[in-house]
Length: 143
Image (cartoon, rainbow, N blue to C red):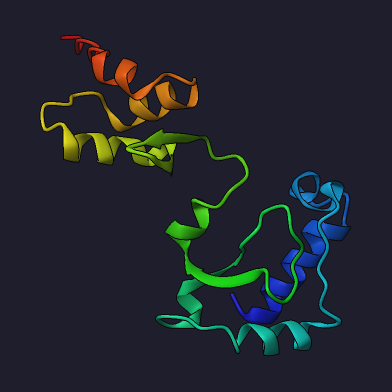
């Protein structure tokens, strides 16, 4: 998607009540604080990045903040998806991580851990402690 298209998509999310994402952006008061698509593109091109710009997403650093200078960065899609307001977080080994990432951390630290990725994320999103998740036995597979 061209950078100017990303600008117009952001404007739509923030200003058009018929946009499917409006309730997560415009309804919350989030604004696009660039005077034009050209202004947006010129700013985005000044941001540090690794890799080709086509492979990166424009991400707001502070999800409660506006689309404005100082609150935008270019990141890979996977990283952008970890900066969503709908993500559930857990504290694991003193660090705040996305619940969906807990499975990989538990498997790395507990080789015998058998719960699936989705079961782990579900339990974490429900507010179960890491100790409770580790103690949960996987369901038996039906034959």
